[in-house]
Image 1: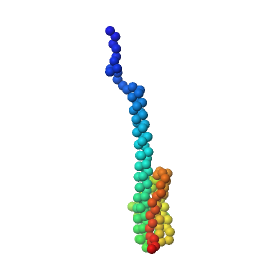
Image 2 (image 1 turned 90 degrees about the horizontal axis):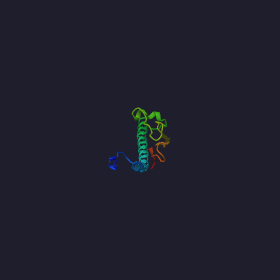
Image 3 (image 1 turned 60 degrees about the vertical axis):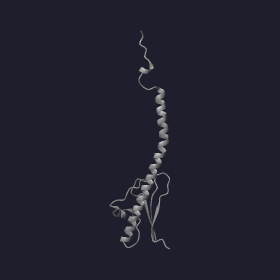
Image 4 (image 1 turned 120 degrees about the horizontal axis):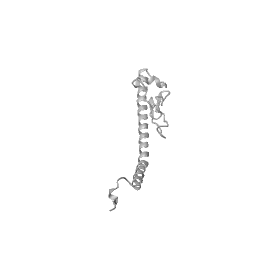
Length: 131
């Protein structure tokens, strides 16, 4: 008698089964990846705005300590920020912030960079605004 293998004795996956699994993984990746990248950009933008807010607080504290007047040099605020300026996650540098003194006011904002996509950073206005 011949020893005939039945299909139930075979082990492994068929090519169709493997293709279906690869197809399902591709669809899941196509759906999840844009959502993940959007979340990463949103968190970087939030961190950049938060760091700019902390920098604005340091700018205001230094202006009060010096009796008024604002300085646009970022390095002057490092000690008020705990010893060093935070990295801007959108630009990847500590110089990724703008401090602009304008008379009795000072504007502080994070710079938008290539790591965050298209967005408009928050601008914090310090000092006397009139009225």
